[in-house]
Amino acid sequence: MVCTVPGPAKAQAIKSMLEGEIAEVCPASILRTHRSAYLFIDTDAASLLKAW
Image 1: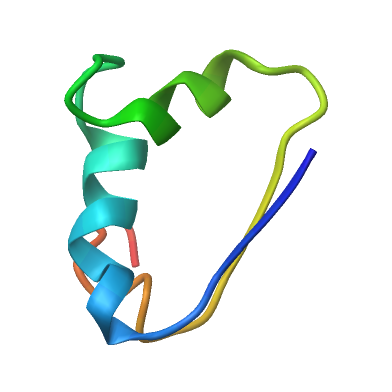
Image 2 (image 1 turned 135 degrees about the vertical axis):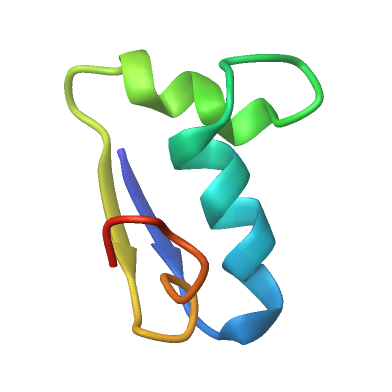
């Protein structure tokens, strides 16, 4: 599964997906459990991540 997320409008969604709990309020968070999920984001989409 490939997920491409560009742009600053998606920064909060990416933060919730990767740093929040796996929950129904953020459906994409379940992708963290998928063995074959690949996430491609740009600098703007990653701007709110702690490790960025």
